[in-house]
Length: 104
Image (cartoon, rainbow, N blue to C red):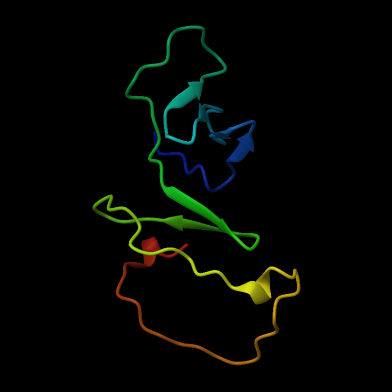
């Protein structure tokens, strides 16, 4: 339908809820609830599911254009597990070959 679950959507129970239509989607992308109908939910009513990893209080989403599995794991950084992240006072720049729509 085109609604962006990441903009205005919210987590309700174990589902991501669409901000526009209020449909709720499970973690595998299948639609769990359409609040304004009692009919069965069609099988084709689903959202794209991505691999997600929570890492030291941050959420990382794996996206691959060909739906390939992640090729690496995020490293363990013991200094971040103390709850006091080290202060970084520097700069970093690099070029990334991607379309601007892929940057979020």
